[in-house]
Image (cartoon, rainbow, N blue to C red; front, side, top):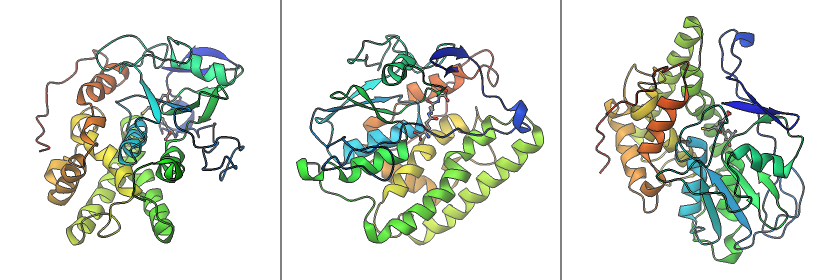
Length: 317
Ligand SMILES: N[C@@H](CCC(=O)N[C@@H](CS)C(=O)NCC(=O)O)C(=O)O
């Protein structure tokens, strides 16, 4: 894995030595918004109008952040309007690649070999991490956004006037509650599993793992009272939580040492995970082969021999 510095690729693992063994995620840099009429969104510049066939999404099927975007694309019926490329699950010295393999879908824009070429096409002197998901504008030949939380907000409503499916997963009246629970779950759970897994000091690991399981215990209690995070209706907050929960027992429990419990040991969280998995269109966005191949093979400092475990045997039906 690595990053771009002034447009040049450098192979480099996360620098946790400078942060006391702590993993700190850097902010996404492309923050424009697709809107119904092309007006600017909450950040970035305007000119990205919702149109069928104009946008292309780069994802990894291993990645929980990219998974959110595939789920909203499916729920909103945007599959025909927004095309998708899928990177190879192994992220090595060149970062994400389009090396052919089962489930990999090549880059139609520039026939790139590496995802970093896509970033350089948009911004030749780019410095920063090369992450998925990436939302690409085929018309202006540039990146709209590489921030999943904002891409799912766009998918939720920007295409409504041009035949997206019904459903509002971030309704105005619930937004303050959605944003508040998202912030909590992002820090303790979505990003929490990474803070546990990438910690390089024992004390940091222990602090992060306690914070993660305290948050899971709290959600277990909430889901004993109600079906979804905010009550009776499924919202964006549920889909954001789901992509971490569905990976938990397969990779975070073993590979990231998030192992005080499995999600299958929490009756309410497990019921909830299985229910969301069974929503029409959702299961096909989850690829356990890519998930396990990516985590166990790509993080050499955590699993040097790259052995991918056979289990666990999950019953999600
Ligand atoms: N804030 C970004 C984070 C995306 C992200 O970190 N993706 C990971 C894959 S799970 C990635 O591409 N990592 C490559 C790297 O950090 O070099 C988002 O939510 O879209």
